[in-house]
Length: 184
Image 1 (cartoon, rainbow, N blue to C red):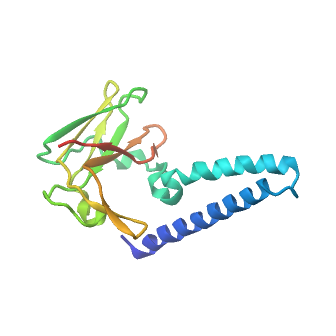
Image 2 (cartoon, rainbow, N blue to C red):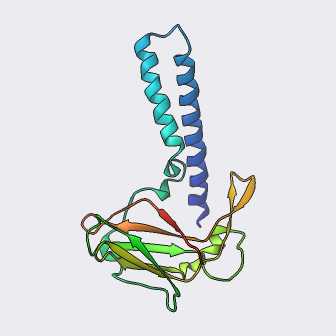
């Protein structure tokens, strides 16, 4: 990953933590301080609720996981990793037929990978499916498990899974990144 954008992720993460932390501390101070009027104290209850909501959304700290846009003509209709041996059916009830679903999983090397960037390197285990009758078929190789650092403190070993986004055909809007666990 280009280091400029890599550092932007950490700057965004730190900025969000500072802003949310300050908002939470200030709101709690106002809430429990009798010097402030009742209207303001009721208002900060909503601020505290908003902060708590944002703290539990992954795309608050990692915005690239959230809603995005891509011109739909840049995405092929169907693509499957050659020789893929796992088939997973995604329930897409309520999603219009013909809508594309892009998906990707860690590569298959039959070992535990120490770094997520290495686990997905070159995205060989990725594809595109279309929704047909409320279902999208994902065909991949059984992915490797890999480790991720949590706040730079310790590495967690993730279970086998793949990620996907729904690309809405009329607008080009993509859903947030979603994850499906695999048992293979």
